[in-house]
Image (tube, rainbow, N blue to C red):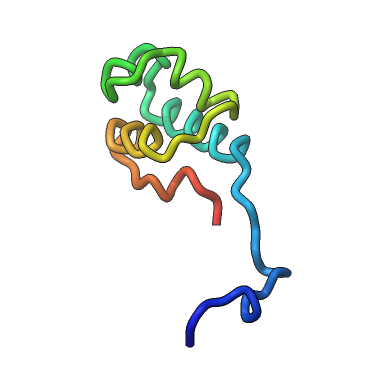
Length: 81
């Protein structure tokens, strides 16, 4: 079976909200006891970039991957299923 617009069930499709991702990132960071500064040092991002992600302004997949790696969680933990 191939995927096309004609066989997608729109009622089951969901968009991932940047706000949901933001909350998941913040929760994961707090679960390991990191401050925003600690996470910035660990993943190589600047504090402002992490604050933008945690406020829902940014959801750059490359940044999320770096954060997930630093927190030792799968990046999929930031995306609600």
